[in-house]
Image (cartoon, rainbow, N blue to C red; front, top):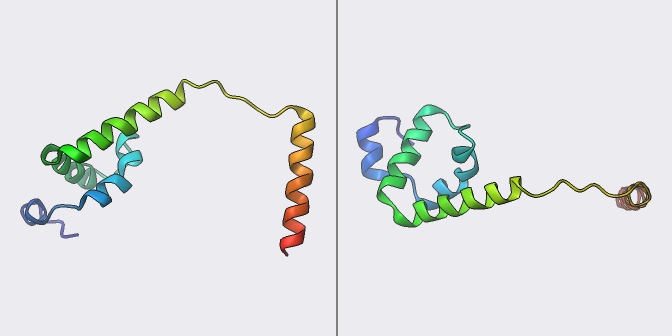
Length: 90
């Protein structure tokens, strides 16, 4: 993608690229120029704004879920299962 902003505004990222960057955008982990580009796209694309809002809601809901871990016996069963599967795939 060309780093010159005026040419980017004309060509813009396609929606699928923005969707692929949604997690990083919401986590504020994108380089500044990419973040600005995504922001410009979101300003002009209602579908991507809706998608980004949905992603934010899903992330917020998932963060509120209780963390559950398998019981000690189930951890042992899982280890045995994965060990069996891993050795048979070699």
